Image (tube, each protein chain N blue to C red):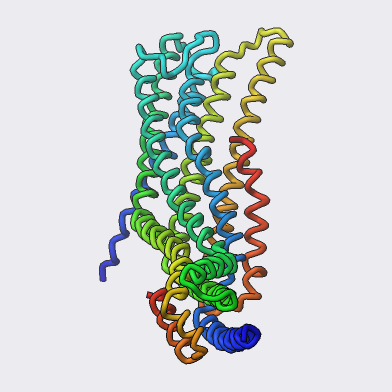
Amino acid sequence: MEILDQEIMTLIRNRTRVVLIVVTISALLFAGCTTPDAVSKFCASAATTLASAKPVFADMKASCMRAADSREAIGAFTAAADDKKNPTMVDAVASCNDIGKQGDGAAAAAAILSDYFSAINALASFGTAKAGTDAGALATKTGAALGANSAAQTAIGSIVGDLASFLTSAYQLKKLEGDLTRVSKNISDVSDGLVKVIQNNYLDQLLADEEQKTAVRYREFYRSDFSPEAKVMLDDRWRADEAAIQAKRASAQSLISALQALSKGFANLASNAHSLKAADLPGLLGPYVAQIQALIPQIQKAF
Amino acid sequence: MASAPVPFNSADEANQLARLFYTLSQTVDDLRLGGTLVDATPADLGRLKDEAQALDNRAHYFTAEAIGATLLNIQSDLANIKAVTADAKTQLGTLNTVSKVIAIATAGLGLATAIAAGDPAAILGAANALATTVAA
């Protein structure tokens, strides 16, 4: 009798598996073809890039302050922030504080973008196979608690596992497509805005001004009757300051390149989310992921 | 026919003004350090240095304005991104709970009974009902 029960349960389970497989294939065909794994890798790279932007935006105020500090004569041993008797320097510090507030705004915008990519990464990384395994195990225990015999428990666990994997996968794919396409233009607009701030305001204005004012400080101090040794020391000191500025410039330019790659990669992904075959996605996103991952250490170098 | 007015682009205009004042500041510094000024006293040179800094301060003001204008232009984009991010987090929450809900619901009377009875049509009906719930 027990052997017959087992045979019946096996038959029921096999028939149900066939039904579930047919339903799964149908649902997946209509749910779209975005491969979560390829999406997850791209989004993880994007989130890391945006996290690397924070110190660059913080350096906007710092660069302004370094330029203000350079106005204090060598030998005065005074920082601009402490030079409260000079109204021009008081104004200088206030203007740098204004830039700091805007820099915080830019960093906050980057954080919003980063949060988005982290959320999409988490959604894309959700393990539907593990969800099935966990669900199956839970179902088996619940079946036992409800008095099902051991063969029925096994059958229930197995079927529920397949069902949970199928349903969570279909839901995940459907929601990923929506979440990608709804913000396609927004991601591009915000990336472009952040690139403008870095290029126009940080690189072309603040860092360039700091570079010029730093050179002015050394020119101001220089005397033609300095000893050769003193001239060499002064020159070395200026070169060290200049190298630090160049390093920041290179890192910021890497950030621009990474943001542009992020924007292009995402635009491609979103515009093809409905029709792209799963096998094409790694090839489409792979170059952008590789480019971004190569740039991230360059961004972090100077900050 | 009169041409349409060019829309005011505050970020671009603020950037132009910033560049102008940075250039003016540097020009004054170059002038005082160039050695070409005739009969300039140390006090004169000190006032020129102060003036160059005042011009630099004004440039920084326009830089801050330009950044603010750029960020203002993307506020609606950021609002939509935040909304979709919140949805994605909710969807992840649903995925985390749905698998447990499926397990308990199906191990309960509905699907378990259908499985025990060996009724594939009933099994499929119960499965589709769950699919509808998850898709909602």
